[in-house]
Amino acid sequence: MESIPWFAWIAIVAIIVWGLVMVVGSITGRSMPSSRSSADQTEIDQLKQRVSELEMQIDRMSR
Image 1: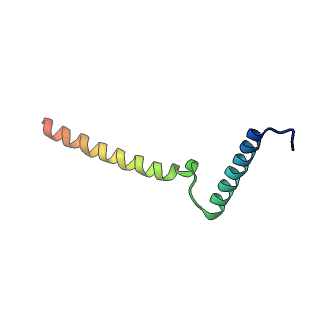
Image 2: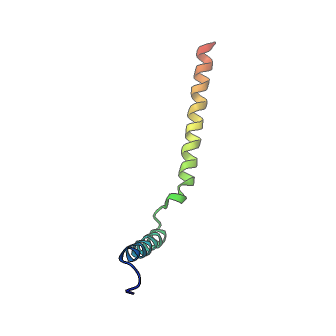
């Protein structure tokens, strides 16, 4: 234990805490950054619909 420097212990503890946070988050069902794809896809679909509607309005105005 004395052969490992103090800053290495900080890194080791940080990695362990990060791992515990990720495990607890996945057990409790909280969303992780990588699991946002379905919400992102919904937002992308809504934005595509809005762009389509705006393009139709521009087409009507240009006639």
